[in-house]
Length: 230
Ligand SMILES: *Cc1c(COP(=O)(O)O)cnc(C)c1O
Image (tube, rainbow, N blue to C red; front, side):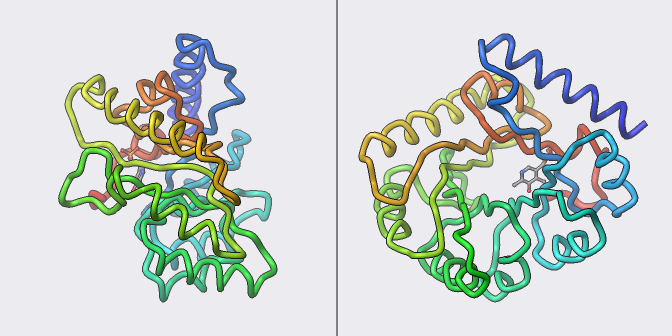
């Protein structure tokens, strides 16, 4: 059942890539497993999926400890500085960096494990008050500061688009994030590469792929609705 959901999402990812003239390998499907039990993650793992997304440090840590070590864990939620230590040695990437202070702590904790941690800068493209993330016009300055840190590498940008009924309404949000990444890439900032664009969720991942997403974060369409809505 769960695996059928996964294969349906995978099929939609593949078709969106085809429509956009992109290679399927350019897009990583992240199974967003927050709030879901390890048993459900195991079922999805059996399909060959290896990228999982979580939004709470302790939950990620618990699942990391209980699951196979070839999983790439993505921290996609707002991260408090005092929680970084739980995950600095466990995550493949942190998608939600939006302040120098948080970046400093990530760099320090990653350094303790002799790692250079890839991070994405979260951009609040739609300027929703409820959302975390740096504003488009402040992104470059923030990235220049973060780029100075020794144990962090800026790999690209991330955004959470608004909840909308028609996914097409988010096309311009995704396009704007892509434009910002092209703009920042053109500045050739040391220690910054605009390789990744993390955008698109259950409601709009196909549009995001058409607009250049390299990482899509899909929860509900794979695991079903969550008990609480985040
Ligand atoms: C929960 C979450 C997702 C997945 O949302 P769905 O609509 O269930 O696919 C994606 N990104 C972030 C940052 C999330 O917190």
